[in-house]
Length: 252
Ligand code: URA
Ligand code: SF4
Image: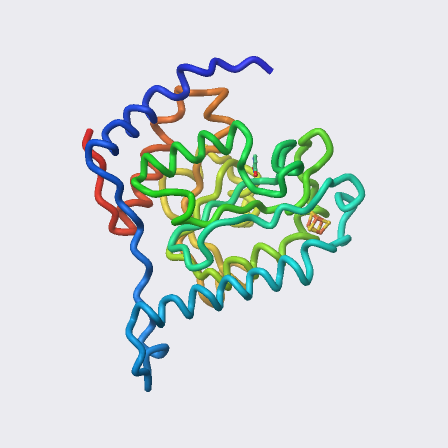
């Protein structure tokens, strides 16, 4: 695959530059819910830490106790290792991609290849770091030769992502690319029509009951590497996310 390594970077690098001028912003942790504070003599920092620790432990339980040894679909036979995802267990923002690729399968980490490097720049352009957010995929194992996930594989793996979202309980989800967006929104609509506005992700499945989380579909960074002309649209989507989270706009 030949990819022009210069042009996709230009506007994000500009964003990076403006970010440097502005100084590093960090994504503040959510305030603890009032119910967590009840009866407490602890200060809020401590309560936040306890909730982060608890979420980290619960995520680790799902990973160590279930995902690492999962054989619910055929990808168990071809993977090198599972890729649970990584980042801040109490993140206000979660990115969801499609499935691990070659590098991810090798390293056991989500978005660490070329697409991952662009995702890092997108996150940095938002004034955040990868440690502020959580990054994972619909599938926890690599499909051979990066083929598209099958419907069976998505169904088999679905409960892990649902549990991750339930535990982290972010304020916003961003789905990267068509497969993740269509899967989480349970729709056949094209990514070009889904992006640009918030949808709802129903945490316990289905399309209308129970708690939901605002979801912004946008283009996959691997697609943006191939089609740098679309980066402006992805950046517009991320700016809507920043607005929703109350993050300041970087200078134009
Ligand atoms: N593409 C994805 O969808 N996920 C990764 O983790 C890497 C590349
Ligand atoms: Fe299990 Fe998901 Fe991996 Fe399939 S892709 S083996 S369901 S963890």
